[in-house]
Length: 355
Length: 141
Ligand SMILES: Nc1nc2c(ncn2[C@@H]2O[C@H](COP(=O)(O)OP(=O)(O)OP(=O)(O)O)[C@@H](O)[C@H]2O)c(=O)[nH]1
Ligand SMILES: [Mg+2]
Image (tube, chains in turn brown, green):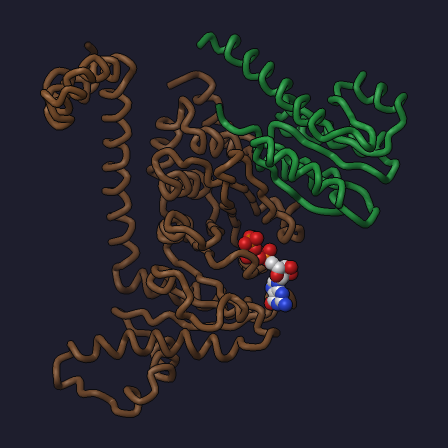
């Protein structure tokens, strides 16, 4: 291990904020030491509950994050927060402004806030964000909140790296949920209609419930006949979804649709309670363990991909490929043949052997 | 090269942050990652945020006249947390002799009102490049 990384990890273990912040940077930038840091996190992972908060720009995600954090802190829990905002594709710069809404927790020793830009995301935004969440988990935070703007597919993937995903919607985000991005509905474990002080909030809530109910209704068709079909429920899918969300079913989770006025601090307790209930469900159903086991497999696959790339695609081998560009141009070989030749010639590098 | 991370803050009690926002946008447009923290930031809040964000630079927008206490205090607080490598710069209505006095204490350049933002951008970029070069030389890679 590099000496500075060893020193850093020692400070990290001692609970130094500086060391945590620097470890996050090393991971974010994939600088030397990243593998050692992540390896050292591995045995400590799993203490934190990871909560993803996503939704359209300006929906109130940071305001809710701030208040949820206060709720957790009142319960004696520590909180690490990652706020992801888009990088400008034109300049590579980013304006990360989520802290503005988190003033009341800014000086709390039990809270760590980190802003992240999406950048070009080598290796994928989701995996980098997950690694950063690992570092916060490894540091010992009880809750890790990941705020992302739900505009692109990669932001949705980020939400999916969490144990529980909260999708924040607002009345003005569209005339109906028809306009919601595909995928958003599928990832939500909890819906929050924020800005309930604005017109249209009740209707939006009902629309979301209706859609959830209809989606569930479709699955009734596949149910064994002896379960029967409750006609009343079938006639009113929104109500059915509302009722199901209250059930403590061990093997099925129906997302509750909550409403909040975050600007006034209203509805936050209910979000925290729903998160607890969802986590309880994840544990009871075995889904938590299963998701975390899947994540470990994914992680190994990611590391393999990264290592293979690093080991086999260096300047020398790329130069070797360039040496065959004449053949490619003339059409005497195909890219597939060259790729296979490369693997034959340099494949031994994959196991870490040298040339 | 990774983007430069700059924390932009507006300490003091006066009420608007137009200047700070203009600076934040200019730095973003120059390819930097700007962490914007808003109005009425205390030195403690600025230092805490800078350390958590692992910022390379703190950019302060100061109009309140309290610069001679605020700026050294921010510096003292970040240093106490192990960040003696951070550049503290910024701008506002600061008399020449105060700028000089602060610079003599190790604070970075401060820019008077009306300075084009490109000057600040160039200053930060130059500083960062020379710090990186120094670090690379030190680690011998
Ligand atoms: N009317 C009303 N405004 C709210 C409510 N909650 C938040 N806001 C305001 O909405 C604006 C955006 O809030 P943020 O918390 O920054 O929203 P965000 O989703 O984090 O925004 P981005 O990170 O920029 O996408 C702020 O001006 C808030 O004060 C609410 O319940 N009602
Ligand atoms: Mg936000």
